[in-house]
Image (cartoon, rainbow, N blue to C red; front, side, top):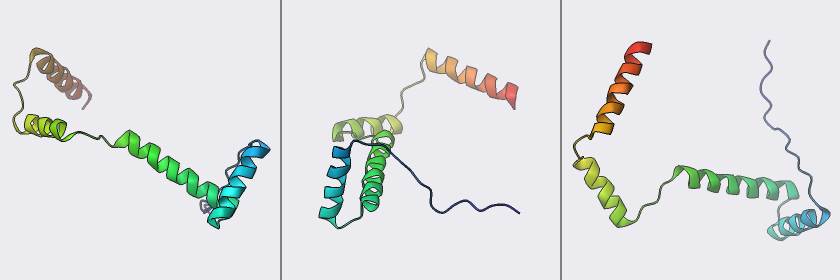
Length: 95
């Protein structure tokens, strides 16, 4: 019989007393427990880090240039032709 994965797991951290006091004060001011506050703050920061790593922001002119290149791609240069040949050779050998 397999064990189901736990629904909750523990994450611990050691912090200076002054940091804990600051976190407790902020939690109290928001009406959350320290645990609720820490989880919410950590998730918010984690989502921001993920967003920064996964989202590319472009100016309007940069976006226009990208879309123009997609719609009207330049002819392949020698480096691209070589890369395509290497790619095709690699996958024809391994598959």
